[in-house]
Image (cartoon, rainbow, N blue to C red; front, side):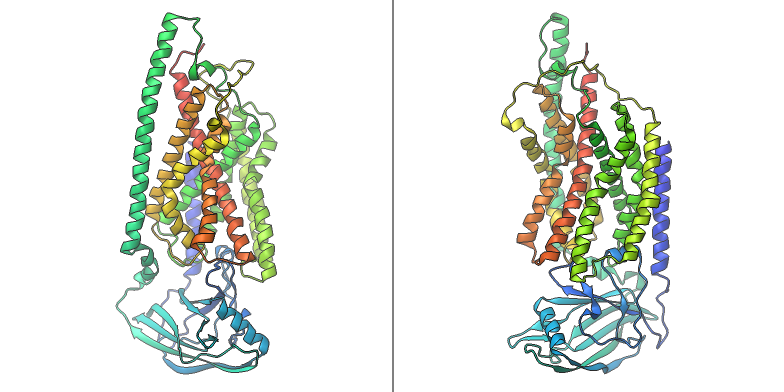
Length: 585
């Protein structure tokens, strides 16, 4: 009952946080009168193929606005690398302009070199006009050389007193030649045209989400779902048939053996009933892994709930990062409770050390990775480098929210007095495990266990990678949720099957094996990262490469802990069930 109340309070807290964030971002009602100033912010520039390598807009020598003003940003926006500042253009509501001069300036040799390097690397710029995103390229490479554009056309669509859509395009006849290292005189111009549309205000973001819902994309997604469902049905049907038949034969055989020959030597999984519930080695680490995995599973479920109710609509700047930080902080009590409770069930005594290990198991590697990558971003002067104030906020959240909740969860777990329910008594001395063929070793079993769940999700993985590490927009969260459910089912079933075959071979050390086999899908996802980087993307450079492999290592490690927990929990239920069904002496 207490657990249900805690989850309910957590969900309310998350909704309150996002409600407050929504009020902050929508402080304006987005209604304007003729001539009103509509907010236009320049965000960032960077190489198109390196989404993590972004720089401040005015790191390139554009015209500065008369009054430079930085927009106050939420935590998620800063984590996303957004740095919004006033743009040099004046796009007042319903006011058209024709060849308006922004500024005239002489570009020095160094500034010409900056523009030339930017055009060579396919730099794009990003702005926000009334919270609508604007994209465009800095320039283009033609036969004669590299040319940035000094002329922008803004086409703005409105419906009554609201802005509905904005497009920007460059004039191919207004390009500046920057192929030579010499000073260049430039006149930056822009034109504004207003057009009326019947599109309602609440549908203005639809065009950004429709790209992932186009018929040919949906066909691929549904093919992925059908492929995964067929895999699941075949696998579960096969395993259920085999296991039920084999187990039924085992139960009949063991019952017959008990009736006919009491002193007959036992074989198979019943033979090791006195060892199967022997506690695993490194039980503090094992309990901490379960606690962290349970927390990450809860975090994933809450992220899906927020996605399905429409919180993560396209270009809701930083909403996902805000959700991850807030929900991770609020769910740390679940990690503390699960880890300490299970550790005490395993008759562990040093629960404080176990709690510290639980707190550091996922956060530790993530923190070290962040320190390295943030240093790289600082060296590159990229917007991915977090300001000191943001780092202080994150440290305060960890100190004042995450740690106290972890400790409270740990104390509750220690005082829960739960006992480990083992159907069979454990013998004093462990049996020797018979020699087994090589394919029954841990690594071959992990390879078998990870391949099937990975094969059920790999098609959807491409779209997720293209969204996170590219510029594709992903909004089909319902399909992603179905794929996630399939992933959990396949992971649980394959781990249970491998656990049964391990016990049938009289190998009773199944605890860590079931966790490692369940989590091995995370290793397959990381292997897919290598394939995606070299075969499906055009990412390059030390910063982008280190960000991609660094943060993907943390994400795959999180999947390893989460799916390992799912695999172990499923195996524990199965093992308890089969040993409860036989008579153990």
